[in-house]
Amino acid sequence: MTFFEAKIPPIRELRHPETALAHGALSCPSPKQYRSQKPHECPIFSQADRSFTQGSICPLLPALGIMCSLPKTVVLLHGAVGCGSCANGNNLNVRAGNAQRGRSSGDVVWLSTALGELNVVGGGEAKLGEALLEADRAFKPEVILAVSGCLPGVIGDDLDAIVARVQPQTKARLMAVHCEGFKSRFMATAYDVVYHALGRHLMPEPSKKIEKLPDTVNVMNVGSMGLVDENELSRLLAGIGLKTNFFPVFSDPLSFHQAAAAILSVSVCPTHDDYFLTRLEEQFGVPYIIHHMPIGIENTRLWLTDVAERTGRQKEAKKLIIKEEKELNLALKEFKPLLAGKTAFIAAGEYRSLATSSLLRELGFIIKGIRSFHFDQYAEVELEKLTRANQEFIYNVANVQPFEEANLLKRNPPDIFLGHWHGNSTAARLGIPTQVIYNSGYAYLGYQGVYDLARRLHRRLSHSSFYRRLGRYASLPYRSQWYQENPFSHIRNRGVQ
Ligand code: SF4
Image (cartoon, rainbow, N blue to C red; front, side, top):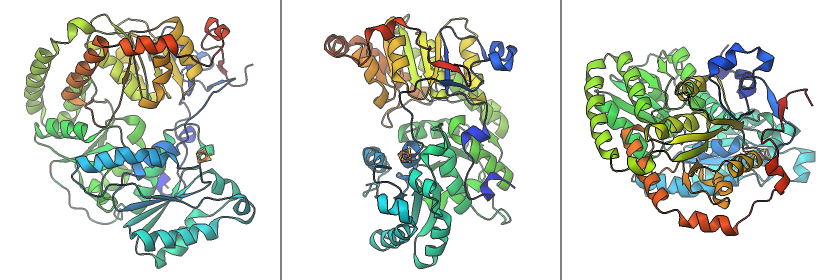
């Protein structure tokens, strides 16, 4: 039995029990050195935890980011009224993404059953059934995603049973999505949850004969690339004679079945993709590559070379890579003198944080520290690349925890901090110039991404007086004693006080 035959997907903690959420090292040894330690002494792969935690990320946040982008789809959140309110924040991204793709109507349609105290006592199934019928009547979508938050999971509402009961009465295809935040502390569970629903309900029957799409490669995008990055990867793959099928964000849900017809799937981020890639291979015979993230010069080269080797296009790839890297290195000359020797701290998802650090080293930066949301075996290859240069850096694994970050940055401020737009305020309030590590309007991936990031960093470091002034007047909520303590003093192995 595969995971996809079960109604509810497994959480990351069960699928990858070695995944770490808490780790701190003031100088980072390589994964090999970690591996040589006894398992219980190996902090990065052991189940370390914190004695104090400042926050976490509900998997609904990234899950809604994907689901809200799907055209002709209504997202119906079955839960307390606050669950899913982050979907309002997705509207800007979804509108921009639709506009970039030439679609006129682009607003997110998300609804909530807004469960209250009476539903906690009496159950919320009747409310969900009515809401599904109303959503179908009022919005006439092709798909309605019934998404469960914590509350129905706690009181025991049977989401799948209600969806099955109401389905004959709606024109829209109904799908249950199990995303109860309390079940998993790993935000990355969100990707599995969404792919589970899509994989169960929108793919062809495995027994059906599928006509292959020649020269077509799946590239999965759960929102970590904007259209500009998709275009860059399409351009590079077209340069070796391949066509691309991007999904799931901004793709018509009823077109996902095309993924089963591709000759190969290529991941741009193992954190996002591994669950569905195995489904495509096991059920539809689509092989996959899950290895490098095409951020940075070396990583783009390795990513493209992997694809070329699997599709018999080595010669074309070699020619393309030589030409592209020659042009890029010429273009970067303008920026490198200012960037060389500058120090950087990077905070992001596990793969992006490590791959971006490699890119920054290529531009001449010294990496002072990296903070990843989590760490699993897929990221070993990236950590290995960074540690082979023998330059020490701080490595922190933290699902948010800005108190650790504040301590690290205060005692050792870098010249620039790169983090997600909602995570840069700690650094900014310490007077450190910041750069948003991901914005769907900007390029990050492929060779174009290297150039664009270098240009933006050059501009930020040339004009950083705003941050210096902000640092003079802004403050952080921690006592001065905290900055004297070991930033990782709250991290310990489970069961050890
Ligand atoms: S943790 Fe639970 S209650 Fe909180 S937003 Fe996520 S699903 Fe809703």
